[in-house]
Length: 170
Image (spheres, one colour):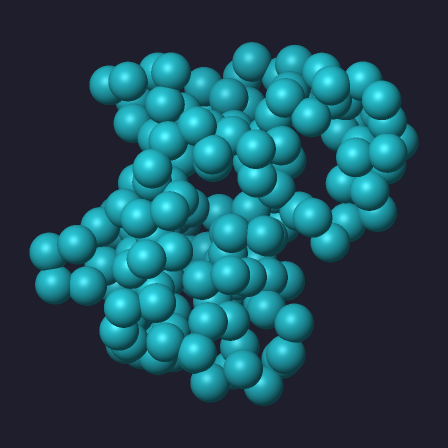
């Protein structure tokens, strides 16, 4: 197992920085906060969430339960948010609006479930405009693509930049 995975959980700066990120799937007035709320620190879920990665298989084969403590698939069972999200995506067609989430592969299991579901009609990323006038739209879309197995599906689902909006400055 690579050292960076073990160190991932020990990096306090990373946890503080990402604690303000939420993933929202919007439909009318419905939204789900997948990673918990800052107002309830016990609800915040961080950890490893890429069940397709070889390192995940190594963690699962290791007999040390401590390595599995921060696997998101297990942490999602602690609260009803994940089940509510699954019920939501089964109920009707939906658009995913991404605000403040990197869409990195540490959430691949959750994101691929949402992105590749037949009821997902589009993915609209709200990107950040940087001080120098550039933005992170392309990087965000590239990270979204890493969570979708079929490149054609990714191109069909992701809303083009001209129809997306910047959230503000980083």
